[in-house]
Length: 98
Image (cartoon, rainbow, N blue to C red; front, side, top):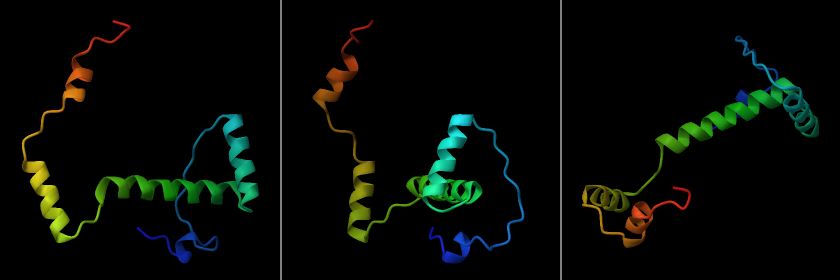
């Protein structure tokens, strides 16, 4: 998902409202960061949340592999798990607080 200059443009017409409540210290921090970037609070919050939303969705939906790597990936998924002694020890050792 690529954000074009048009999507980031301040002059772009916005037709929906997003309302959130925040603590005073959160708003103050956001205001300081927006000021450093020369943006309004709304611009800063919208751009930041939009970018974070793109990152979250891309992390969950896309990873690129060429054909040989994809076949290797599928083979690994289809293969039975290999024995991992360190993981076995970790999962079977009683926690110190128990």
